Image 1: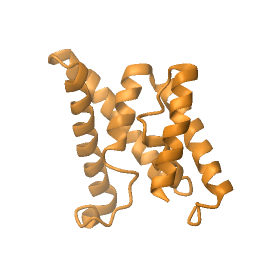
Image 2: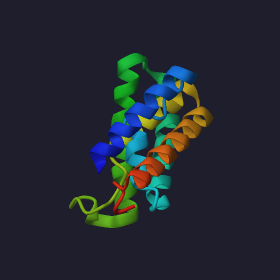
Image 3: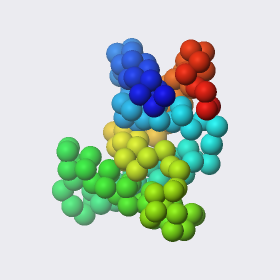
Image 4: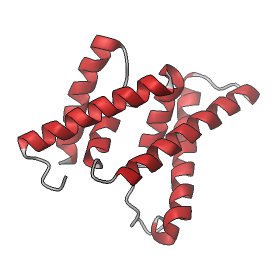
Length: 147
């Protein structure tokens, strides 16, 4: 089901970008978020991590040369570290053993990067719209047996 969710999200994301110029927090993020619609706490943790990452990267940009691919890599690495740390604080050792259920460790970095590039509001709006469309499509087609 994850393959279908990502594929549908990619198609919807392509059209959203062509029509509006907005990216919904990375190309694969809407598919992943759609799979977690029944677990809003996990989505909230991911979005909080992305927001903290964006603030951290903007702060780092004031004291170092951070642009382009370097800024993207720092966003992904910082989000990975923040997501892992937040998981450790919330879930304890379960994250170290791979039992913590999160949207992903890379997704918050992708979302943070887009928040930094195009703004928090437009990114969250696009992400919510596309994730909802992917979720509804999965349910309508019947692929969302677990959702």
